Picture (cartoon, rainbow, N blue to C red):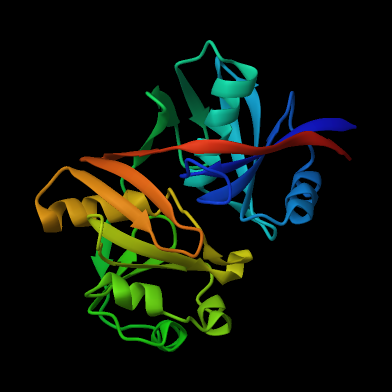
Length: 263
């Protein structure tokens, strides 16, 4: 079987920045184990697959280890492929997903995703593996009510950049990943994201976590629009807006590679 495959750098305006995602358009679903094998072979944080459905598309995401409920950068990458490669007549697209309906529209040279808001809850007791894995005590820690994540707040971007996590310890927090954040130097907020139990020690750019970051910083800074930077080694820039129960997450994307796979 011959399939098209694209590799898109999401939340970046030039290649080798942001987060690379593989996108594999399908006419109909492959067996789950075959999609997992393709994702493992690609060995990127996410491989997205989509099929046509009811005038829109059904979208799924696989890490090298397993299928996940939501992935922002691979959603952005999938919309980029639809808008620029497959259906240039489209101005917006609706994806059905395990996290409900997701919407992406053209926004000038950027793409804007419409995602559900993630809320935070205070933690009374912090997991030992979280503090040991981060190696530096945060000022505040929350749990994210959706998305299986811890949310750790530091006082400065420098502290976030300086973190050298013990990924073996953080892996024991499965199914939870860890969002770390602080005020930004040249943005409203900075962040990094660690999910070693999913085969992603550090994700270079993570759209989904901004479903939690945006309302948190919007409330703290008393502003609706949030300019966010993910300060991973590759770096990423996101432009977000808090809309109550929904979050708008915008960014650029660029094509790195197009080819065919044989499975």
